[in-house]
Amino acid sequence: MTTSNPKSVYWKGVTDGAPFMLVVTPFALLFGVVATEAGLNVAQVMGFSVLVIAGAAQFAALQLMVEQAPTLIILATALAVNLRMAMYSASLTPYLGKAKLWQRALIAYLLVDQSYALSQMKFENEPDLSLSARLRYFAGVITPVAPAWYAASLVGAVAGAAIPPEFALDFAVPITFLAMIAPALRTLAHMAAAAVSVVLTLALFWLPYGTGLLVAAVAAMVVGAQVELWMGRRQGARI
Amino acid sequence: MSMSTGMIWFIIAMMGVGTFLIRFSFLGLIGDRPLPEWVLRHLRYTPVAVLPGLVAPLVLWPAATGGAPEPARLSAAVVTLAVGYFFQNVLAAIISGAATLFGLLWLLG
Image (cartoon, rainbow over all chains, first blue to last red; front, side, top):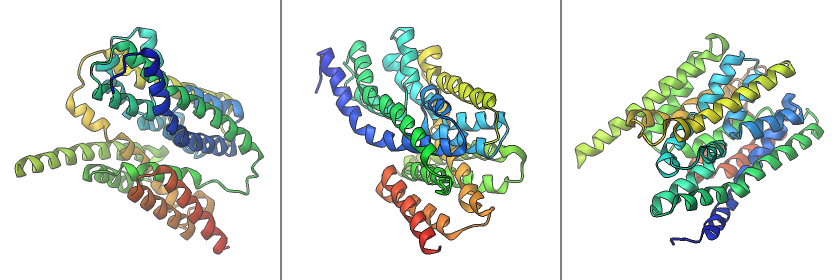
């Protein structure tokens, strides 16, 4: 359906984004609880969730802070988790690159997995959408998602303070990460990258300050890209 | 956490700035130029390149047991991965993993 009425494009975004509240809320709750258990106060938890809004990177930073990794390693590793967002940014640029600077800055701040996935799909399926309609759709999608993220972080942080430390939540972070990784193992290339990441990190665990993980991550990215190329060539050869 | 308050806020601020710059990169600074295919090809694999390595030592050598592999946590990890992989559902994977962990911890005392 092509919608020209700007108001209805916004509301289409809201209804498309609303189901993702169910995904975002438990993550944010969990982050609030785990971060509080790790020793952050409510303001710091909210600092993370408002300034960073990127669940996986927040969990990664938290884990490395608990392990007392050096600051530079914490930042490099957690930001590496967010590098995929450069790809989101690049892929939305043809559709939104002509928006005003403040609009692009606001979109960048709110460019999370959910707002990216829905907008990219919408813009690709409806190439005739005007720039203002695209902006309204993006605004609509993020309207339910971002507030749910903030609010659930706050609830988690406040609740976390009330949970006694005996309820060891040490394994909440690994479980969350595994749950995020598993559905991402869609192709042989993704599996190869994940396998290299695991094996090299374990093999290089003796390296100081968690630098082994960074080395492993770079190697895993290269392997993923190479396997993708190789699979593409094999498919090409068969046709 | 033994980290100072100032250091915690420094990390939060730098992560905020860094994450924003990553998101703003092409939209804001580079504009409408296409990204080389080889760059996109590598960026596609960043999450599966970083997260598995981060999680592997936590699963095999959990701090809670002083670094000794432990059946409840290992089983929880396997169940989480399997449910996430076969059902493509993050929430279902978390819930099954947590249920396995707490169930086994309770059973094994």
